[in-house]
Length: 303
Image (cartoon, rainbow, N blue to C red; front, side):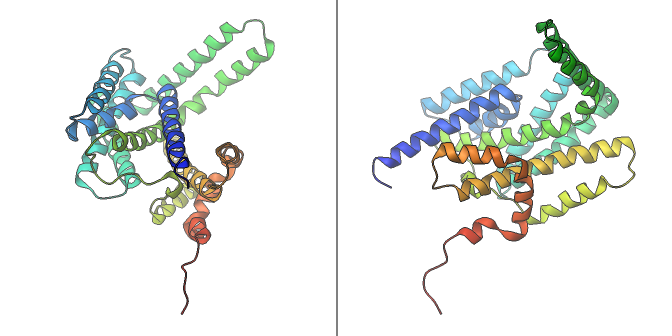
């Protein structure tokens, strides 16, 4: 790489990271990212103006996200975000595990904390499912009112309202993926901003992987769907499957990005978008095949 190419690559990487950060804050609960980032920034003892500015901005975002609607779903999201943030940061202080392992442990602790929270406040799963269903139907009805003269849109939204209860059952799995992504982004940006960040720096996305033994959890979850489970157990298994599918899809995307690393960025993005339906299978197969290891150049020299 030439001297001029290195700064250009750095600028592109920074722009890409900023785009991911902005996209997450627009599409996911901000507390899942700002919560762990704020705690990490505090514990790294910020001193420079840049660190203090980011800490103030993130702390303000956390404060804003903790006020507002007091209905069931917002309360659960706030509780889950605080639990996830605290668990991830505490594990980051005490553990030398890879960031993905810490995130998975933090997620497990958060789920346990939310179950206790529900028991204390008398919140049953049926209440959560009903609350998510009501939110989805309200959104669909608002869309329908905004397009009163389009029969195709009205028909689509009517069908969407009918399947809202089924979609609501899968919301915990989707939120779990968002919480995991938020912690991962918080770790990345903590190491970008902090002068003396905590722990080891995150590895490049091209190297994303996790413990291969976790594949048995995915296999067991998938196999459980074939059993005659009661409705609640089947819902739990379906949400677990969403988490596994998300993890292995990201691993598959990292493999494709590594294979196409020499290609231009637009081509890499297009290939990852087109291949996304099979990325979970690719990531799962990587457990045994290790695609990136096979693509690595063999060591020079001989016997």
